[in-house]
Length: 232
Image 1 (cartoon, rainbow, N blue to C red):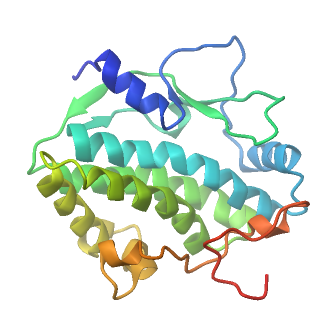
Image 2: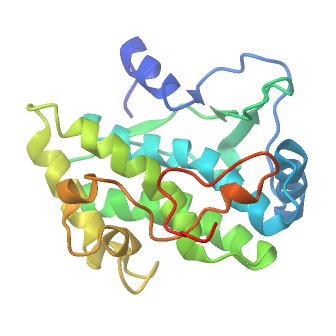
């Protein structure tokens, strides 16, 4: 077991991750329809499809944090989806909830174990969450994967600037873009599909999505700067 230092806990906070119950009320959403209702209420989304896409734009912070902890510190959280609570300020008009980790158990990961650790994150916190909602909300899994990738790609772009860990970060990115680590999750790496033939660095200049996250369908909002849909 690995005990987090205060500095690492502070890094997690940058991804809207809390390890302590800072308020008395938090919620764990165990039913798809329950979370859809919550997301619709917070965004004003007309349909469950739009609401869940907006939810995954927030949930992506949590998943990106898992990749960050593995690639930078070589540690992995031992919790499950049921160990995540949502801390939400109802007066926050931008709806950026914090995620409460109700267990603070972390394990060290060796270089040899990093492929299985990446697979575990993709499976437990990516595929399981996407499977939970994609059928109910009738939304493409590819949209939800790209909502996660949209934050993950920016995180890795920043981590690559840290020369002491650059080599291991590059290896993790390479694995995420290969099909092997996606076995029993997706037939091919959707992350690779999002960057196409450009390669990782080139995909950031400029960054452009493959799928539309439906943000423009929220009343009062316009399409984001990375939207691929010219007709939005």
